[in-house]
Image (tube, rainbow, N blue to C red):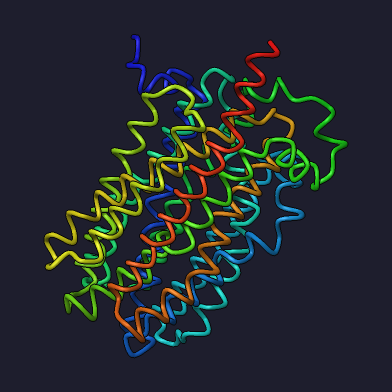
Length: 414
């Protein structure tokens, strides 16, 4: 049976196995993230958005601090075995948090410590996970596989927060953390089974990956300046707009006076837009650099409209638009980076890309939380629009002043 072009990578049985396991695990991850953010702002603090910002900071800052070794590890160590270790470690941290919450002894510093531990493990897990997708599929399937893998993640974000909101109200956040532990099992089984199969992408590895050091990723980006500019643009956008746990929890509590169910609904609404964005990128061929530099403008417009949305319903609807624009930018950018990078450097380049996105999110989180507390949650969203507009201006400037002339020169010399 011939699958539609949008889902063509699913014809690969190894990729199907990976996606199913990852989808269930991602649902659990969103269960935990929703419960973790809500328990901080509603139970462990006096509705303090800055505390949620600290949690986000601790969870993402290891992406920057550990960058010298995480990308190297993703290229040098067997990615499947590395993922087995990271997934087991994440399950242990989720179980620990669940036990603390259920026993009623959980304190804010416990959440901080577990968030930092999770961030350290995720710093190794994320680049290995992104690069492992290209191990599972052939080079021709990479673009579609990256989009479908991301769609799986955001489909889980549609389901996870909504379920978490109901469970938090019904049985408490502690059991949500425990349920997350169970969701790790399918992915661990998938990784075990994939170890007994021949993976298409792994056959294309060369010894050059073994000898090159972690700085090779930076050297590769220096030779491809458009990729470096793209990463700066991503950092400018994600530093504020990707801190949605901070400003959404603050909007729910302070502006709409809502509960955990409404908070989960907002994240799920954002996921609807994200899935639409993932489907669009899955149906496209490799994105061009000219297309990418225009995408921050969409984030700027949607962030601005979201900041001025007058009520909960209009705000929730605008979350789908913001989710779409963010997803179109991030997936298209990561697809461009993966396909523009030779396979032996892919782990290191993806580690730098992830560190850029998640590290900038970590650095922006305390500022977003401070703005939400001292000014208003709406201002914490509005700053996203300003930063995205600046990223758009940077991209257009580089594209017109440097990229296009280089392309014309290459065309003429050819």
